[in-house]
Amino acid sequence: MKQKKKREYQSSELVKSFARIYGFEDKLVAFEIKDFLEEYLDESLFNEIKSVNIQNKVIMITINSPLLKNDFKMRKSFYLKKFQDKFGAEKFNDLQIL
Image (cartoon, rainbow, N blue to C red; front, side):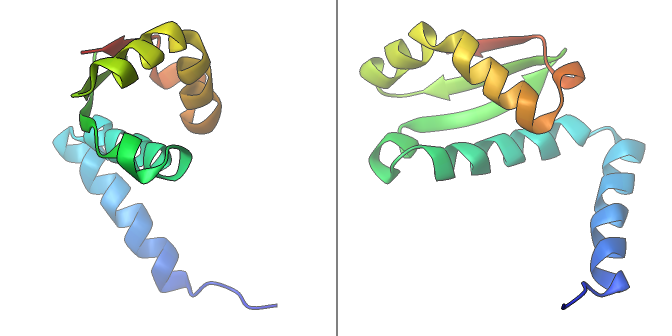
């Protein structure tokens, strides 16, 4: 069984530590959410997502396509639950589709 080198863990921990110190933890989580959406959606749908941000425990997803925007709004609770399960329920309490 191949183990990860301690150095790999340290670099990840270092990035998280800097994020905590300089106050951009939310931006790191927003990147993780965008990566999750890239895996979850097909490429053409993912390309319609303009940005993902987090402010005051609210995930804000900006979408260019009116059809995809409507789909996200209709399935808002589904996506919020997915994000809470994957990244922690305490990190978010709402999802806004812009």
